[in-house]
Image 1 (cartoon, rainbow, N blue to C red):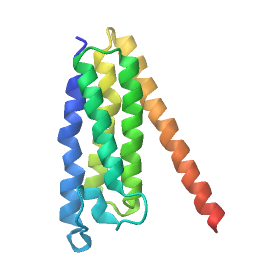
Image 2: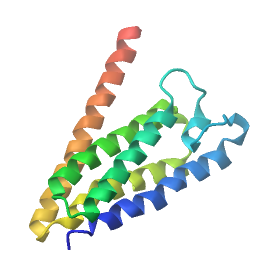
Image 3: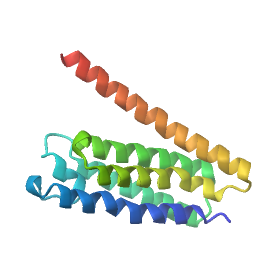
Image 4: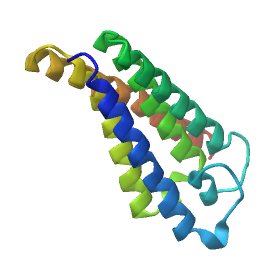
Length: 158
C-alpha cells in the first residue's frame, strides 16, 4: 500500500518527543527557555538548535503529507535524508556530546523511523530494501560529510 510511509513518519512524532522530555528532566539545572529540549544543553551561541528542530519537523510534515498522496519512495527518501541531516544538526547545535543517553536513544530511534519510512511504500521487498539502503546510505554520507567538516574546522582552529 502506498500510504504505509505515513505510519513511519507518524512514529517519528511519537519518538521525537522522547529526547525533549528526557533532556528537560536531565538538564533542569542548565535549562534555557526555548521551544525544544535540545536547547537545554547549550545556550544560544549562533545557530540555535530550535531552528534545526523546526526544519526537521517541517520536512517530516511535508513527507507525511506527500506519503498520504502516494508519492514515489524516491521523493520521500530525499525528504527523509534532509530530515535526518537536519535532526543531526539540531543535536550538534545543542552540544550533542553533553546529551543524556536517553536523549541519544530518542535521537537514533527518531532518525531510524524517518530513514526507513520511505521503504514502507515500496511494492516488493527488494525495492523496499533498496529504498531503505539508499535512504540510510544517503543520510550517512551527508552526516559523515558534516562530521568531517566539523573535524576539519576544529583541527584548523588549533
